[in-house]
Image 1: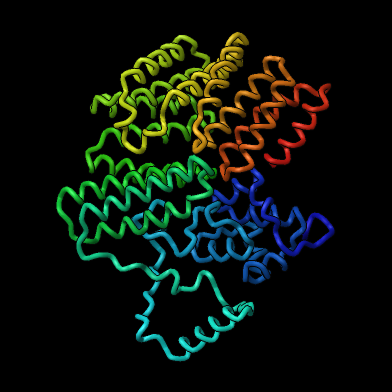
Image 2: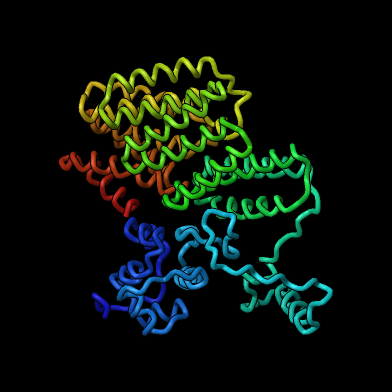
Length: 460
């Protein structure tokens, strides 16, 4: 029985972005999802109609039956209008067993017959639909997820350096989308590219091309993990990073190993476990030291400083920041591998800023220092680093409010909100929570109250 007395027909897209719902989707907890839908006005019958299940089946799920089968999860997601990425599902077909979100029980999708064996009736139907569309008719029978669109592209019998170059160029393009628009803008494309690249390992190649292909595949898993983290899918992110780590070790590239461990540590730091983050950053340091790599050591030292800041360890935080500054001065940024090429002076300024902001929670003197560093970082950001700038502005607004400069804080917060609205990133939404909490401490200020209302609507 519904808890409220009205019926709803379709789920609004914003409902999937509410934190409680996002957590249930990420865990594939369909019992929780259905209960939350009931809470906002959906009957068991309506859920059944949307998902193609029977009402008794929906009832059994609501009362605790687990949903594990991939095809059922996919049908539920599509029926309700859930973005598949929120549940760690592929968009075209189930993940192959070599990808981090696969399930061994999934059967491969049968291959379509070649075009020349296509039944004449189907060809005539296609011609009729094509003609109707061309002449302006709406053909509702066209299905964008038709199996023909999901048919696998044939893999070359042998691949060379140019094939691997195409993979690395595609990865670079997808990474740029992630920086500018957030992980939600490109994660499904990353997973599709990952499937294709994995299939290239079936082709013949030279030993050197094979090594480069493993490295390219490792970096794709690395990007899949990062985009998963950015949309709030922590467990798929960890699994992707583990795949990446194994392949980077096989390819004997300690720089990439260090990068993967840095990104894995950021999951822990984002979730508030600074101690665990430090352990992962230290593992990354070991890999970077083996390679005598300056820029990876810079990135890891700066992130370790942030973790020490959360732990209130001023001496360790300052030591790591000084080390990061020293290492950055020695680094050759132009020769950096693609997975570390993002890091520059603006990133170090930002990490100084958030480290001081963390230390400012127990010592207000550091908050003023945070304002200076975060201001510099936000002003130095390149246009394509929109997500990083959103992080900078959100932290800067929080620092201003904490420092008592409410008008400045609200002005910067408005800029932050404008940046965040262009991104598909759960992490930037999560970063609005401390800002909302700080603004809520100023109930006497009308603009601060308005800001709290606006942020609450965005956070859910």
